[in-house]
Image 1: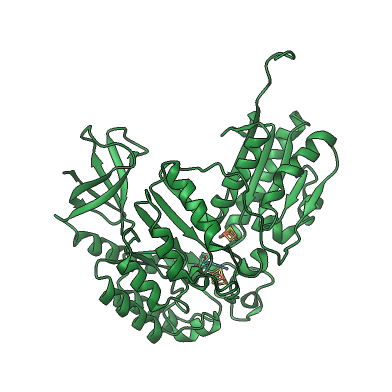
Image 2: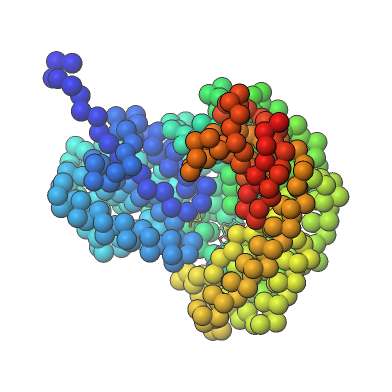
Length: 444
Ligand code: SAH
Ligand code: SF4
Ligand code: F3S
């Protein structure tokens, strides 16, 4: 070039929260790449720092406030640095973030992912002033935002945005807005593009995937699953999250009939006491949930079942908690993601008077994890000697010679590399050492 070597710009992208945030960040990285940014893992080296934030629990917010503090020092040393916040906490706090931390240059809300490019361009040319846009619109979000996918085998594909459920503890409906489903052909096109790029596994994302299509009525979730399953080159179809109140028999039978739809149901129950479920506004009760699990296990006997649980919801008594433990022993989940209830202001549960003390919550969480870990271990132990089909992901983090991958049931498998397996292969591993979190085995 006439002006010498064009200096590459570098962007640090910090991602917090759920898969939806990872997926949004891929669309943001795509826009930054179009502006000439390449990614760095070192904040001090960055020309642009972007934090894609989460506010589902206080701990998630605390992490972000910690990072905002770190960036203050970096920006002092490098005033040209552009610093922005996106995601759920950005949506919730809006310009309050800038009042609290004036070194933040821009705040974009959850519906503004596609506006990152224009925002950064504006700041690059002006180098002063703040930009805040956190309007939650009701219009469909733009398609054709460039995507820089984080993985090489597994692709996240959002199918719907927002949530209409208003569980009383949860901030998500307030920061993600109402449910909007993408058009089926846009989703299928995205899956086809991912397949053409070599992706083998896709995960369809939404806060409540079972209500997909209720707004546009062009296809329901069961139909969408089968459309996506038909895309050539895709070996595995996953989805999350299923709300038990809307999981239809049609979805269960799609999993059963599909070619590549994984036999894994992540069906967050949240609690095992009907009284607490009611106070949480989870709509279903234990009996309906039991019936659903029975239906899943009858139709797809090989299926694994996982869940999310909240401990210490306001008003949770020792009896309620005992019911939760009993329910875990009854259902026998393969794994459970367990959370301490975190008070989110603006949600109905935050104003409930009988908040549970921290120490009690923590003690219950430990007891809960003890019960669940034992069940998880027993479930995995039952797989000793079985042959599992595993999508090979590559070397494990700690040892080049130990490879890792997952079963269709979403269990992590580790094995000693033999030499002929490559990333993206579907391999067979005989389980020789089942553990609570992983299955160790031998490649066949
Ligand atoms: N839409 C998904 C959940 C998204 S949030 C669903 O309904 O399944 C992921 C998990 O975070 C929830 O399942 C719940 O277990 C947990 N969670 C949400 N709000 C919380 C809060 N205020 N405190 C603790 N855990 C919470
Ligand atoms: Fe939150 Fe409930 Fe919506 Fe899930 S379904 S995002 S827990 S309000
Ligand atoms: Fe967090 Fe928002 Fe996901 S609050 S869990 S990043 S939808």
